[in-house]
Image (tube, rainbow, N blue to C red; front, side):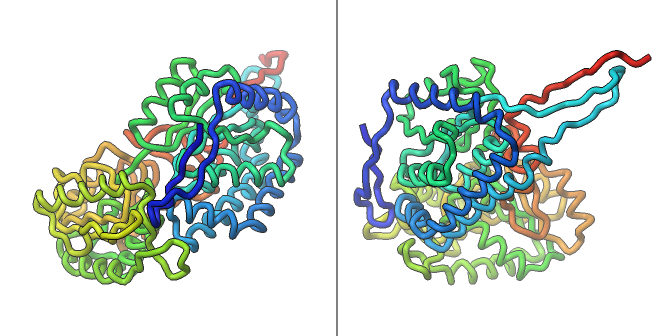
Length: 458
């Protein structure tokens, strides 16, 4: 059986890649378990040397790797190059900081000495989506590998070329056989992989619906899991904010990867006194963006990754307009080949409209007025999701207090919500649990072993 990839810019078949049958899947998982026995005994310096080497390999091969993303899921080429660089940075960050993050912690007790040491736990299965193929792979793998675990990557069926490119980069860097492996599986075979005795833990990024299934499968066998799920991120723009900078950042956050990002700015909550003014600023900026061929250096917004995703987005737009939203820009399904969708700005969105209630995955910005700060916080929290949020105001101290009131895993104050190897990332509510990245993320898949050294002290 093969995975057939459709080029989103023209709707034509791009290529096909084989998937593993159950026997080949189990063989790879057993190899990963075998590799773990020796990999766990390597030093941080040995792991770091290889991790730095894979970053070098990727930077040298950046153009080819970037084009894999551009062709398979429509990421504009400039963004695709940036993603390769960001993945390489992630590898280098953990090469430099993993030993510090996992340093033993001395704790006082009745022992002569007592401490916690962080030990690897085995093979980590990463189940990943298509929207940031390289970044999400390294976000899961770099900390897990530097902690002494081995990794198997089940990437999305729409980016098999990217998955092969990632695995090839590890191979070119000289990683021992079995330490990092690509695991191309059919969706129905994922549960069997989770149940395999070689798999010690699961890292999942994707929808809340799929995440609940993965979480249940892992929990059934008492295997730890980290879930980074969907989001409906609010951006609060207060009347005293630097509106020019806020508008620039909101637009950037909404259209990166054609808006196909869990942490994109999706619900724009604008304080009433500046509502119409800020809407006009957004409209002016959105209207300047170029929609087109993702291989074109001048393209700002590429196609939606799949036909069904574009259709769902358009249905969300139509339903919201039918419910009373004001369409200031876009909103029409384009004719011609490919899965393009125009940048769309909806105003006067209410909390009963699908553009507010559901996660929107595409270049759709939904704006609504809020009376004051208390109203803004209430509206921001009125969602089943809790991944990221942003606050724009001239009063930083006030913004820090606001952050504590917002139910989300991360809050950006006067800036863009983003993921960074140095900082933990993750959500609450239906946006998942656990953390990736930073010193918190690397400790998700380790054994925090407590050691008590006698004799006891009186």
